[in-house]
Image 1 (cartoon, rainbow, N blue to C red):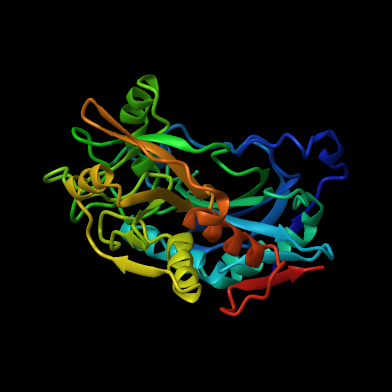
Image 2: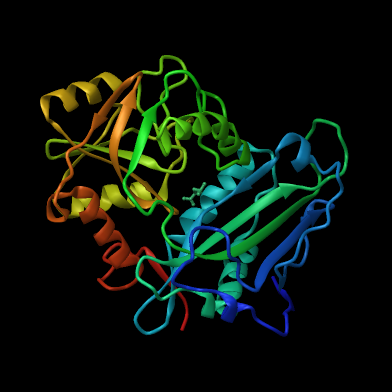
Length: 353
Ligand code: COI
């Protein structure tokens, strides 16, 4: 599919301090936009990042028919730009689209469009250690009618944002014992907007109590540990790394499955199995609980320094970097992503440079 180019004459890259990026506040000069109407995807355009003009009755505003992905581009030492497992994000985007009754998108728009956008915007991929270009493909329902039914018109867009990692420090988390993120038969495994909006209020309450995130539990019993909303979870009991199996309630994280493969490759014993709140508390009491960390595109690998359940806080004993599985996983993963070490798994894809 051909892509229309409508490029701006002036870049604002010189106004950006690449040493103080934060997360998701700064955007590159251009985005890719493609509309779906009359049962077909139209010609995509790469154009300046400017506000959309949408009908106030567009279904996304009323019924939340919206999906997104999170990906990252990295620069190697020779200024080449690389993506990490882009096909997996493309596949997951289309699974989310199916679950949310939205049209799937062809590779020629999502992936080829992304490669072209990145080639134009390659100067925006940061070189600083720990920074990368966060990629946010998303799709919204744009049909202007208040009927609560599937939209017939959609907009797909890709935004690029130079970022640092999402959590700069180890975090405190609270285990959910009242609110739920997802339920069986629901949309927990889809990357749909409402999954995140539904977490804002309970997470706000947790923030006020001094916790940065919530560990979500199963909605029926609140006894099984699931995910942290922006991250999948890993629990290290003695020398075994445990992560709950993905399900209709848990996002099938690409970083999660990469860490499982990397851990096995490095000789770390892994277990994909349900883990209960009680098992975690017991392991904390016996000293078997060594580490908890989250994994995700934005979060990369984020150490959890304490968890709370009910009124009780359970701090974890900090480990030296060379003892920590979280540190080992983060190092192994980011070294592959930035091409500092060989990629024996074929995960990295060169876009340009
Ligand atoms: C990502 O890791 O890309 C995510 O989608 C999490 C996001 C909500 C910050």
